[in-house]
Length: 168
Ligand SMILES: CC(C)(COP(=O)(O)OP(=O)(O)OC[C@H]1O[C@@H](n2cnc3c(N)ncnc32)[C@H](O)[C@@H]1OP(=O)(O)O)[C@@H](O)C(=O)NCCC(=O)NCCS
Picture (tube, rainbow, N blue to C red):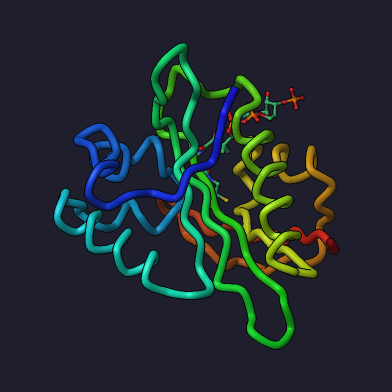
C-alpha cells in the first residue's frame, strides 16, 4: 500500500533520493537529466516548493510493516489562481518497484487531492515514446488533448510531446 506524504526537507532528503535525481535512467525524458543534483540543492528545492501556496510536492511512500519506504515523488501544481487548472508530474525512483501499479495509484490519489483543492482541470505533458507514463495517465481517465510537434530532443532525435488532460 502506498501513501502520499508532503516531503519534509529536514528528514526526507536521503542519499537514495539524491541518487534518483542524478540517475538518467530514472529520468530518461526529463530535463532533470541535464542537472547535477546535490543534497543541498534538492533540500533547497523542496523548501522552495513547500513555501509556495500553489505547488504541492509529495513523496510516494510504500507502507512496510512499521516503516515507510520512499520510492518516488509526485507533484501537483502550480494551480492557476483563477482558472483552477493545474499540472501533474511524477516518477518512481526505486527500480524494483516499477510496474507494480504504484504510479497509477499515486495519480489516483493526487486526483483526489486536486479535487479537495477545488482544481477543475489536470494536465500532464508526456513525450510520445514514454509508453509507461502514457499508460498511467490513461489508466486514470486522462485523454489526449494535443500534440506539440517536435517539442523535445532525446539523443539526436526530436519527438512530439503529448498533452493529456482530465476534467475533474
Ligand atoms: C512512467 C512511470 C511513472 C510508471 O510507473 P509505474 O509505477 O511503473 O507504472 P504502473 O506500474 O502504474 O504501470 C501502469 C501500466 O503501465 C505499464 N508500464 C509501466 N512502465 C512501462 C514501460 N516502460 N513501457 C510500457 N508499459 C509500461 C504497466 O505495465 C502497466 O500496464 P497495465 O495498466 O496494463 O497493467 C515510471 O516508469 C517512471 O517513473 N518513469 C520515469 C519518470 C517518468 O517518465 N515520469 C513521467 C514523466 S511524464
